[in-house]
Image (spheres, rainbow, N blue to C red):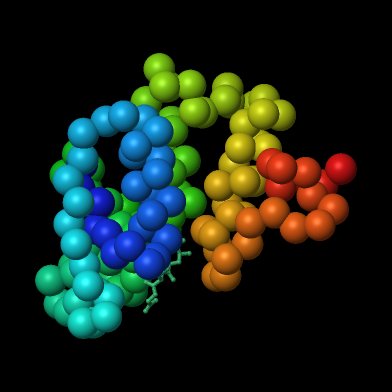
Length: 119
Ligand SMILES: N[C@@H](CCC(=O)N[C@@H](CS)C(=O)NCC(=O)O)C(=O)O
């Protein structure tokens, strides 16, 4: 498991998930201040040149929300992925998708509960 990482980016939420899972991983630093995320080598991993991205089982994946949901599913014994079809799962996925995983820094908003689900 390799995480392409820059501290001041959404890569931190993927690192947080990896730490919660307690699985071994390698950090591959990408210095956005130096424009390394737009260099050809990194564009082979993430064609849009954004952070984060991971390589795992020989494949690469980007979009922080997709990555953290995949990681939760991949390690069910860690109990971070509620059962398919459960309300807890959709609340979990809503939170993953809305907290910094979209185009801007989302987080919770007034009127939403701590899971990001209204009411
Ligand atoms: N929705 C994407 C957003 C990715 C994104 O915009 N990352 C920023 C850093 S937080 C970035 O790499 N920006 C540089 C660029 O898009 O050129 C995700 O959550 O992974």
